[in-house]
Image (cartoon, rainbow, N blue to C red; front, side, top):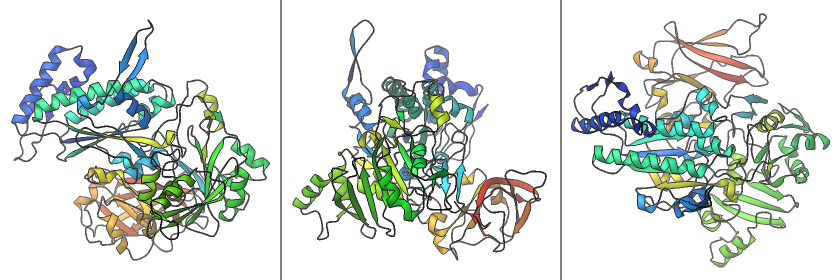
Length: 618
């Protein structure tokens, strides 16, 4: 039995005897069952008469689709079949109502989590990826990349949440992608969301390319499914469905890469590669999967020395680091040891490129052209937008801005040195490299170059223009009304004012009101729909216990937080508490935190502690 609430009218219910009629809109099933098609079409015709309306716009976050691939697909790709006959593949064409695809330049590194976070304007994540080095905890934090969910994923109306289904993307990526395509259509058609936009995140499009599946044919399949959805939608709603498709980065399709021997190289150079930094020769190298970039964490004072040494690491294309002792000056070097410096005027968001020894970014012609056109100011600076206009089609697009942001605010724990690898090399751990031999791996991403960096912006309702992950939201009204997941699920985190200030787009009241907190923090931020039903005076008990407990472990600590901090627009399901100033735990340890309301557990999350035993926000 399906119950559907009518939007914009007094509450009514419409009952359908078979809740699977919407599932029959799987276009694979349509081919098998004319009866199900008839039932589905009948339902679609009845619902509009009852006043039920679907969202006007479908926004699809399609992971890892390269600009060059979509551009070629719109123009038409000629292939030859087994019998020697040629045929053409075309999709998302002007004839279907789509505008020409535009570039979306990714972050540096051009990796999914950091790029999607930037696209939706969320607070930067603790690390560029889900295994990261925490400076506050002085520890390598390892999260499961398959079962964990980041903020940008939680903001979607639909994304595959099941860990098993996600894991299958690494074994059967084409099948998993088709499953996501089907679920996108089915879930959209049965949504009761009253919002204008419906957000979808599809991740297996990235997996399919890592594992060398035919992404062109898969995109053609997706185009056909969306076209059928548009036909059904127009019959039902009386107007076209607006579709926007975004991707976060490109793919190099460079074949199986050679594993870069960064650990061996550093150890031979006298460094110790580990999980914490206690001295100038300690280095941490977080890595997840197979990537075309490397992040290096080390003593800041050691960064310039180490950067010069890393130029000799086989497989390096470019590397960048902050200049020691300076917050707004960065060095960039290549394998030939050519060096240039980048200066960032944060107040004006302008940049200056200073070749020191050679021209590693090949930007001197750009500088000459900007000077000729009187774009540079008296000190040689141009704004970020001016640099973007001048470099968006370069081999290293938007390099000055992306390097500066990547090393300072791309993550809450940014790397000391970022390396962009030659596309014939990859960064992975030993067991990943050996495991990848069992399958076909022929593409990756993460580097600074255009092949890895150029994602897409595509629309059937308005022309788009070349942009970047930090700018694209302005073309779509800042992606309003993404899912407010805190209203429907329990969770928590530790927050500080300084880190919350990095949130770019305001989604919740706290994104603005954090400024009113009395100190930097950290503060305990918890949310649960169960909080909405009780008054603020009802105390919340917080239990803190070590994540890995043994028989000799101390019992869990219980902290009763009485009165939340009052902010101007507190949502009823969210509370902010000051932590007890005398709260001290074991140093550099992972803890599980649970909150209890009226004797019942309402949420759980984990934290880590600093070397002096204080809770670390990130």
